[in-house]
Amino acid sequence: MDNQDLKIDLITAEYSTLADRVEMKLIEVFQSRKLKPGDPIPKEKDLAVMMGVSRTVIREALVRLKTMGLLAAKKHKGTVISSPDISAILRKSIIPEVLDRDTLMDLFEIRLALEVGMADFIFSRKTEAEIEQLEDIVDIEPVHSASMVFNFDQELRFHGKLYEMSGNPTLMSFQNLLLPVFQLVYNTRFFRKGKRIKYKTHKELVYLLRNGTKDEFREGMKKHLESHFERIITKDYIQ
Image: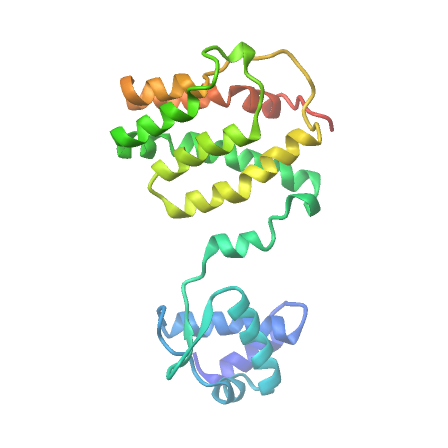
C-alpha cells in the first residue's frame, strides 16, 4: 500500500468527514503492516505525509482510536497498538435510561441468548465449592416457581455467580452491563401480565448442576428463561 494509493482512497472513500476517512484508513494501514498490540505506529508527521493531510487531522483521528482503546501512549515507545477493553467501550454507550425501546429489547434478547449459550461452559467448569456457594444463594428461595417473584438483587447474585463460573471474564463484564437493562425492561412494564409459565427455579438449576447431565442443565437454563423467550417470540409485550 503506497502513499499515492492512500491519498486516492481518502478522496473516494464514502465517510462523512476527512477525520472519519483518515480514521478508517489508519486502521487499514495498521492491518496492512501486521502491527500487533505493543507495536509502535508511524509518527504523526509521517502519517500526515503518507495520507496527504495535515497533522491536525491525523491527531484527531489518533485521539479517536485511543478513545476506542485501539491505541495507547507508552513511555519511550510513543503511540502503540493496543488490545481494546470491549466491555469498557460498551459501558460508555450502554446506558439503559437513554437507549430507545428497540435497542433495549435487542439487549434483553442478547442476555437470554448468552445465558443459554454459556450453560455448557458452566457445567464443564463447575467446582464443588461453587455449587455450595450457589446453594447458599438459593437457600432462601421457594422450591416451586409458582410463588417466585422477580427480584433484581437475587437475580444479580445468582446469575452473577453463573457468569463467574463460565470462566470467561468478558462474559462476566457483559453481565454487569446487561442486567441493568433487564431490570429497566421490567420496571417500565414492557411486558404484559399474561399467564404465568412454570419455569425452572434457581434452586432446581443448582440441583441439575450437582446431579444432572450437561444436556439437562442446558435445557434447565432454557426452561428457567422460558417465560421471557415466550413473550418475545409471541410479541406479548406492549408495542
